[in-house]
Length: 328
Image 1 (cartoon, rainbow, N blue to C red):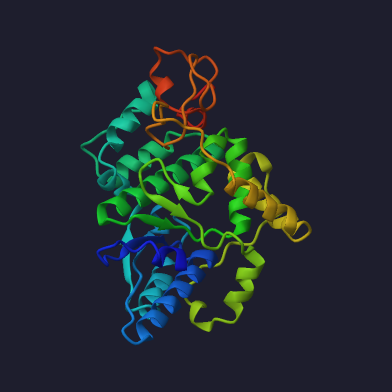
Image 2 (image 1 turned 90 degrees about the vertical axis):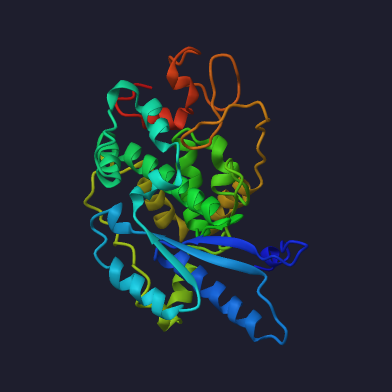
């Protein structure tokens, strides 16, 4: 975290960091590490904090109804870290923190979906998510919307950096899934340290630690036992057609990571070395922020049957694949 302390502004103003907390192993451990770092800074004579940490928890029960242990875990986190600022938001807050989300959804879905503004934001988001048919498309759009909510909240609170709690196992799975879904052009910020398309920097402090290593850390921190919501054990009796690409890649990394840990680490390190080729004139997808390819340009990836006068030319290939009733 020394890098972020060094980013302190000349007028002694603290840099604001945002940690999205999923209450899983990785983000909870990162929160524990950050809290210890803050306590060390405060304990020093004449010590001052090098950064101002904000924590955002997007209620998992508003994304996946099966998240039954969330309330207890959240309460345990607030008690374990009383000096930190924890904010809890429902998933449908994306309409509040991304002001143009309504227009984006209308353009994105076209005639296949009608957004009824008379309904609550919760019902509107549920209807939009229900309009997406496949498991891969649902998981992909949920990830995009979650990122937009986190970034929107960061900008609203003046946070300049979002520090994600992804381990190298998670980043390897995201890298492989991103390429498979046609989102390779977004790897320069979605799994790498650097500036995002929305003017907020992304950082991944745990990128060099694998999931098994974080599990070992968890085993010696009793105070985290009530906070962390453990992942459901992987079942072998699942049809692959019912799994999203993201889930398939996580399973692959989970099963192969123990055998080829160096290979998985290299996937993450290689992705972090990628540099964006986007120019100031390149068109970015209004939904996910990725590069858009079209019939007249070479940036991003070109969507099949995409024409320059089609509204879909505003969106990237990855998003168009997840569009309701998409045929690309």
